[in-house]
Amino acid sequence: MRLDVVTIFPEYLEPLNLSLVGKARARGQLDVRVHDLREWTHDRHNTVDDTPYGGGPGMVMKPEPWGEALDAVIASGDGEERPVVVVPTPGGEPFTQEMAVRLAERPWLVFTPARYEGIDRRVVEEYAREYELLEVSIGDYVLAGGEAPVLVMTEAIARLLPGVLGNAESHRDDSFAPGGMAGLLEGPVYTKPPVWRGRSIPEVLLSGHHGRIARWRRDEALRRTARNRPDLIAGRDPAAFDRDDRRI
Ligand code: ADE
Image 1: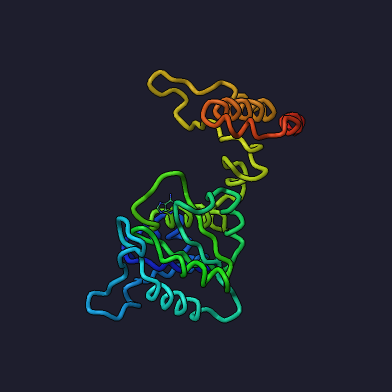
Image 2: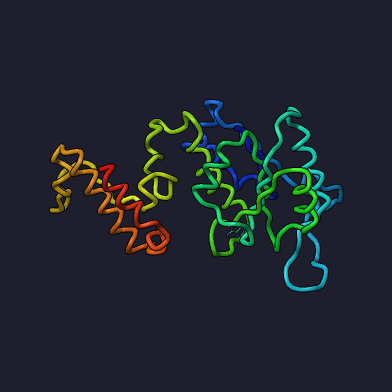
């Protein structure tokens, strides 16, 4: 998979050299290219923003550098693949595990993290006409820019790529995975030692009884979901709980 990121803070994307994403890059499973938006400015100050039409606080990112940058990045493709343009914005549709799964199936994503009050709207309109374009929010809060959301989305997507996680089953039961722990949050996990500061692990985990362990995990998942995300239970078809019971 190829990922391009156009930003005025290329250093912000350095964590993409680390850990799981960094390893996927080193193995050639992920081709990440970070571009400095200011390369596509032509004035002495490398200006990327200007005051908003209609007045108001803050600055708006100018359309010309974004247009030139996106044209250049897209033209550097092999001409066959068409990218999905992903625009991080608090005004976008929510980023979910389901969206991560869908995006992980695409060969090429181009991220456009903005600063200030956002990018001149005409840029979104222009590229949405030619390409699949998604405006995406990672949550109901406002960050200072879209770079952190790009890190978040990249990590969620990269770990789903074939061969990136050592154990392909490890995302099957992810919280939120479609068809995973039946749409519930994952419950608690334990490792050695069996007693730490006087605290033992739940005995069932030592029983070796797969059926009982599966049932316990499901009960814990249900308990955690009821406490932290009751909306996930309210939104579910009750018959699905029975189906899961039969699976166990
Ligand atoms: N830019 C600023 N806040 C954001 C958010 N919550 N999601 C995506 N992009 C953003």
